[in-house]
Image 1: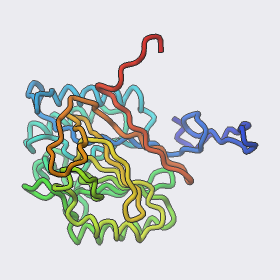
Image 2: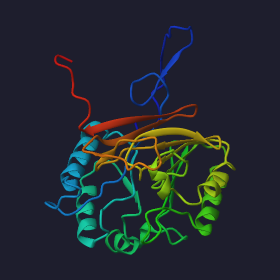
Image 3: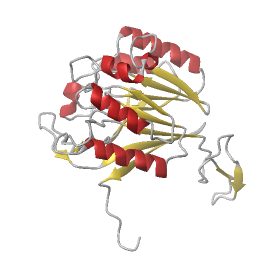
Image 4: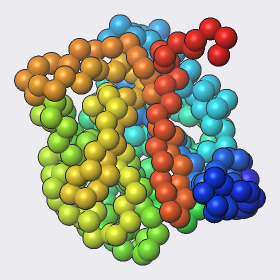
Length: 291
């Protein structure tokens, strides 16, 4: 990937306007590339989680990141990094993160333990809020990463100090486009996972609405892919790296667990567009013969 700006190679288009080729050699001046992984549910090597080898799945995920997306500006691990919040699992995660050819940032989810996470990855993971909240500026975009975990609870929440911090970071962003990454989904999905939603999602949406260019709010937690517009803001969930679920549109019906896909989101950003691709790196659709 070109790190010093888009190549701006121009050619003809079918409608008479010039086409701009950005970093990735494709039409569209995409300047930013972020990969988002969530719900790793890691345990030390050899320990199964819901019948799956979460350690092996993460190894495959990092291998695929390095092979297919080494040109990314950033990889974000969006919570439920480990399954039981134990130190050995975070040590195993640290080893895999160090293999990545892409800069990695993390936040936590309801399966994580904040204190244990910090004991392994350092106090630099915490913002002034005392939570794993981060703000980065990349290629004209502001990236905000939020810690929505409530200790000992499956649902999520953003504390008043975090919402205040978020408002400040949005004000700093000024006219720049903003991408937000958080573990818990804020927007109702109409399935059983809404019982463990971000509890103060409306307050979160109100804080976001103060900025005029929120491009995406990307979450994990639910173990399936969805897109929505809520309160005028685009929201996305990804299936994540562990098991996925079948999204039954009955909020009383438990969702069946599936072995795949293991999925990462690939986010491309430009001044005028934000595109989210869903890359199934385990148990994706089989390739047709000869294709």
